[in-house]
Image (cartoon, rainbow, N blue to C red):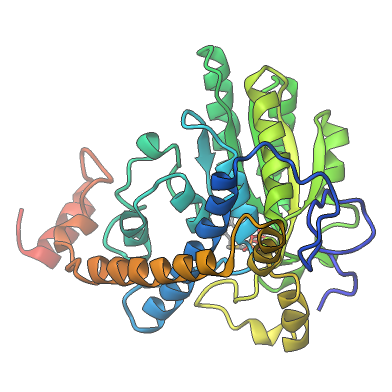
Length: 355
Ligand SMILES: Cc1ncc(C[n+]2csc(CCOP(=O)(O)OP(=O)(O)O)c2C)c(N)n1
Ligand SMILES: [Mg+2]
């Protein structure tokens, strides 16, 4: 367990709504009441979907699944701040952000079902790049895309989603420096959950990740990642600046994932139940629900309607997903080489008995 509480230590952090739902900053972030309710609805739906995916994996319907419960505000708030022409570059944990971007979640989940390489959703149509498992590599993709958008004269930005552990990779440093030097319209969005699998934040760095922005020469924002309005504001400001030619921004969203690293991980081997219980008190959905309740923007009936919608929705997702049959075995050999080498041809004949 970390000796220093990474999410709530003393470094300054943008926070607009306190964990108990009380406003502590300027909560006028430029969203209509309808949009404010949409943020809550999206978080409720995302959490319900995440729990369904965990169940689907345990029931053998998904091969492996990396849950995000606890990170809804970080993903929903940031993705909501993007425009249609922007491009998101996820790691492997951004299903909530994908959903906000309009990605068909059944298509997305085919990756985790093992029925298609990387999911058959259209990255360009949804502005959401394919899932990226090699940690931090998506950061250089995002910066490259941003440089391309700039050269094309497009008023668009990219966002790279990555974790605290990913910020220790060379790709992070290379991407950040390149973005700063060429004023790439990119947002480097770190979800700091205090852990990189079993490695605590205390073994990764000794100063806030956001503070590195000074060294690269770009704005850096440390934001309460469980405060959806604060995340929205930080990301919206970064996106507007990027599209206007103001270059990149590093955002460090302090959050906590209550589930394991993935369904292949046993988090009880390195993380105490007490730690998880402590962070549940910072739940992003409960905080925002209380805030919207106190301002009269969303009442209990609205929340109940979101929950009912979520139940119906995930039922449909499950039905569609589990109806997808086994793909033809030929696919193991397809889509890699235009001109397959001889040994692959031999393996194909052995496995399939065809040419
Ligand atoms: C290049 C590379 N090295 C190692 C791994 C194995 N791996 C997968 S996720 C992960 C930790 C990532 O931690 P973080 O960036 O904090 O993201 P989180 O899982 O906490 O969301 C590691 C080491 C990998 N996928 N890619
Ligand atoms: Mg992490």
